[in-house]
Amino acid sequence: MDYFTWCIITAGAAMTLGVVPTALSQGMALKSALEGVARNPNASGKVLTTMLIGLAMIESLAIYVFVVAMIVLVANPFTDKVLQMLGAAH
Image (cartoon, rainbow, N blue to C red; front, side, top):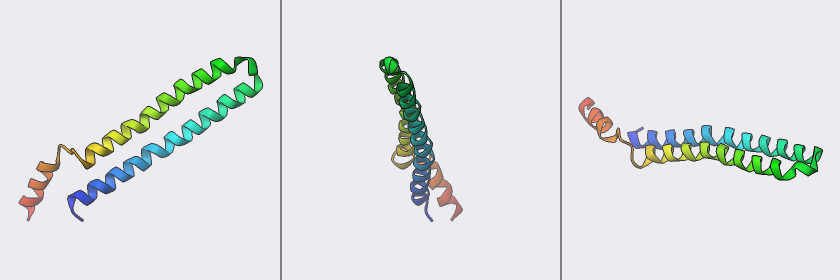
């Protein structure tokens, strides 16, 4: 396999490893918030506000993973050096 194929595989694996835990965490946060609202409906405004802030923070992790994956695919700073090393090896 060539270098760019490895970059695509790495970016896909990074997205998978970064997004799955994020999705599970958001589901657990939503479940907990809904249970809290069900137990105490008078506090629903505070619980939902706190949940939304928490979901935004959790979502930022997935966005960081996406940005790193895009850097690996499009603007990898090591591309020239790796290609030089591969060229020197042949």
